[in-house]
Length: 263
Image (cartoon, rainbow, N blue to C red; front, side):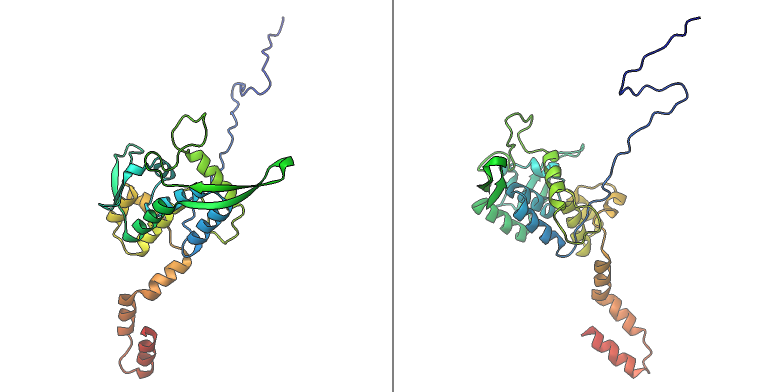
């Protein structure tokens, strides 16, 4: 009796009865680093020095406006109103468009970018041609996209999230400061939530500014570093006064030491 054989092409994922199909494990980067303290400034300087001007501006905006990189890349010149001090952020993830306030310090930086832009001289190695020097320039447009696509075959009018993510991936390999987790395009957003929490902004207000509806999600953003936790405790006057008030009044030495510590 002839045995019927079924040919399986090379590369096919077809499995026999009872066999489990192997699935490739997707590598995850974990939560984005919030880059507390001076780390965020050092990272931005690194991007400006070794990366590109448009990426520097985009990452800066993800921080000061607490934006997702896609929200940032879709911004247009008309979305900013320096008279009313608001920026209109378009709809995303089933959320309607929202107006976000511009802090005076942020407005000052953005007006500088609008007037002066960013320009850097870059040197790139081009194979047999050797090193080629060129001018990297980003300008605030009179109208249209802040970050227009540079490719003629692009399906969109602005730069894509993938382009920004790949650029950040290359740059973090040469950023040698100690970082607890992975630097991503989302790091600016995490840093702003960290700043909101450090400043004592109520969660309800912070969640609205970040466009985060779920409280657990918000709690996972902008985690404090160990140094930040220590600083918050040390600088909390109410806590220090409470602890000092618990010392026995008869212990003059302890009382004097406590008083010096508050100064």
